[in-house]
Length: 251
Length: 275
Image (cartoon, rainbow over all chains, first blue to last red; front, top):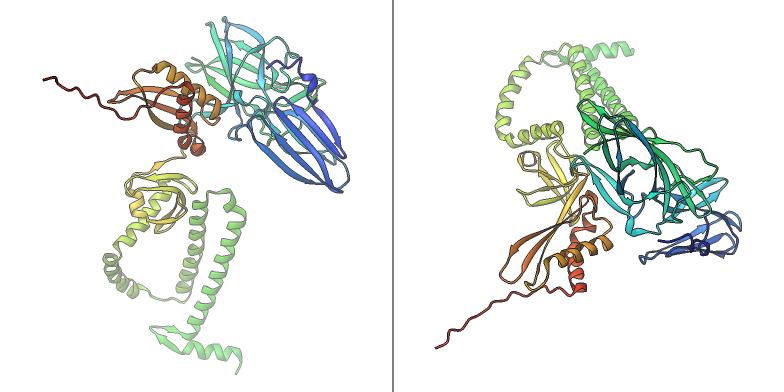
């Protein structure tokens, strides 16, 4: 989806005040807030798959505040896992004892939050690219890890985000093995990662992947890495889980 | 008469074999206190510890705590009053043999229940299938003598623990993912590769719960009498069976309809010999 040209016609991420009516437009999605009485607002959202969500929002004052922000891609079509499986469109080759930093696109969803006394409450979420939102399994059917699967391309840098659809993630890969390795996928619990936004772009916390030997098998140790940025951090949609790491097997 | 005199008079009234009215009264008090303590212990257990345990384990532990305290209270009563239960034990032994024969299946269910709790082939909330009995549903609980399963039609069936324990149990929720299958026949004139590509694309576009890793699998299962039969196998998250299996055939047919691939009726070529 080409968005740089079209992103101008869509609503930007950020905080909006709703006093009478607010219409937000995202690719294939329209969102509407409308006052229906002195202390109540009506919310409706329609997406490209024909799904419609309608809610009444009682409010303490005659005005509400909402925030539109990118969130982790875990909710479409239903929340089943905390893990994401990024399958790269091109393999990366790392020679022995080497390291590389890559930028990859990572799918995002968009959250709509109600702001109450500086607290963000999750009201709804949408995805602008439902076709790239599928499940995948890492491991055998009985003990494997269910993941949200996305086939992603490499990005040029942190600013190469695809508006409303994909953020950018920095991955540092270190190969401490004494043989060259192909690297084509990464599996990690994305609940350890924050999402940040600016205008219509999004970035995510990064990953550090160390290819190493554990006993007699080669594994990839995947750790989250916080990034330093002046972009705005998105509110958290899901429950936050900490200190979770993954060890992937290497083919 | 002082209360002390009253108690003295009660201790002199013997009911049977050294058991006086006073000792019976003390026994009653000990048992009542035991029951109250057992109920309080059970309540505390349910409030503070049970929420962190699986439902079956919590239920069974609470029973053990409750009846354990009552048994301790009874033993305290008998030992404090110096009651000799040896005669009762002999009579009880003979009685137990008689009862044992009569209640063989009950004891068998009880023992099977214990084994079920130890082995845990399934736990509360698991979806399972017992092929031997033709039962599929959600396990509600494993009780002392029987287990209850809520079938998919909403009814609850009680299964004696012995039968449950000795049956083959197929767990539908112990794996991360499950596989759905469908079989479709296409006409001999149509291209198999094109049909597979069309079905694969339609599944990807319209079935978001179908896993893309591992990919949907297609097997040409049979060159049948009227059609080339293709088996479609797709994986889905274990709890989303209803988003895969019941709509898989509909998706397959829609894909073939869109591409104009024929699903043939049964047909037979008849050759007539010329005179």
